[in-house]
Length: 129
Image 1: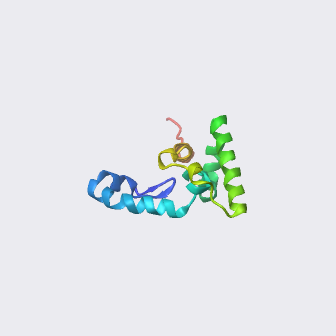
Image 2: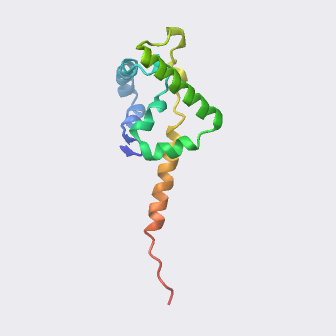
Image 3: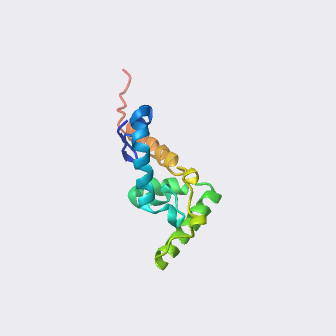
């Protein structure tokens, strides 16, 4: 699927093609490093609230308490480092294997529920004769 709840994505097509994946993986890694959010201790999904306001607000409210606390802590640390105009020490940077998508499945779940709700709202009820 090219268009999903999180926007356009060719990820499934690229991952399914080994050659294309091997060519694009270094470029993707370089781009993520260039973005710099890991240098502030943030995960990718920590950035998504401003990009997808409606579903992510509901998804954030569904987070377990410990994950919501960790998210708020990462935001505080990131804002503090941003105010100081400094990156975290290299030992505290987020490692690529720790950058897991914790909010994306919840956003997709909220979008699926919204689609189901819209579908149910379109049902026409007819009286049986």
